Length: 376
Image (tube, rainbow, N blue to C red; front, side, top):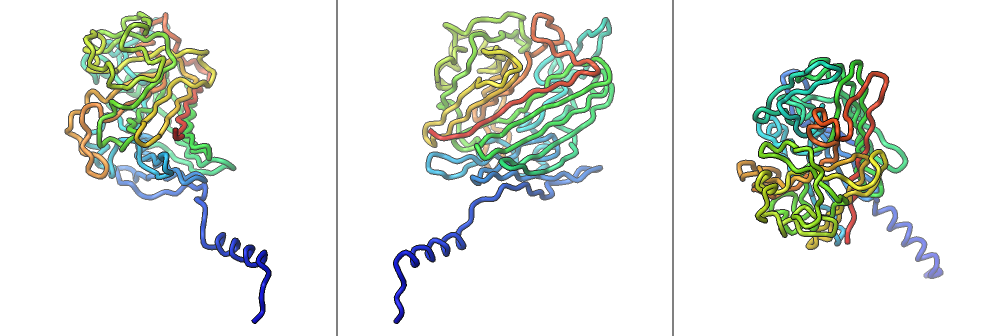
């Protein structure tokens, strides 16, 4: 019987192992997600080289699923939503969606620009919320999937016609989702207009790093790089004040459990039913910087948020009431998800003292937000 050197056997064994195992491939795939009377809706799956996945619908640009690893390397869905398109059509509190033309509230559903007053759709009492009755969360976007050396991409585009939901000017918008091999979900927003208008785009994903919404998020540890926040009135419209967080339940400068002070006897918490407030982020707007960190200790998952925006809306799912059954039969009760909506401040079109949101012809609106996942 012929014998072989030990080195040769090891080489052959290694080669056989490589043939029988495979690493995840960077890819973007698509499947039909449902249909509207005038369009077919697709669901795109972005996969990076680590196996992390994000599923995005071209209806509303909705992030329907986001599978992030835990401390044991097991992937788990960390966002709230529905298994099928019908859920988003019937009852969705903006789960995972692109929000525009204006994220958050505009008081009185009106603003004045160049001495002309524009009446917007009232869809939040007397106010305007998240772009109106049919905002960007309820339109079908043109989708272009692609891959680059270290990321899977989905580019979505939509042209909002002059007068849509009351806004002036045709607004051409491109939103690019990129899932990188660093386990980052990067969102780039670009918009141009043919008339002076206002623009404030964001994403409204509800996160639950523990189990995707099956249980409360009160034990999540949150740190927000902000010395101030914008108090609101009973209608959740900013008063114009930039109030210090120090000495209040809004001080998240050190990691703090969401539930630690959420039910404190504080007028602002009563207005929001919890946290539903804009934080004035430290650092220079326009520069990409770390602004929020969230940790979930049982899974070890960590979410870091980077943005070029001046503010972030921290919302703790206060209006979830158990009436929605989401993915895998999970019932979404109050405070089962949280949002970190990077943005310009609410009601900025009526607040000249806030960072400006006016977009002029010839200018380009550009913002970037990155949601980076890791483990502790």
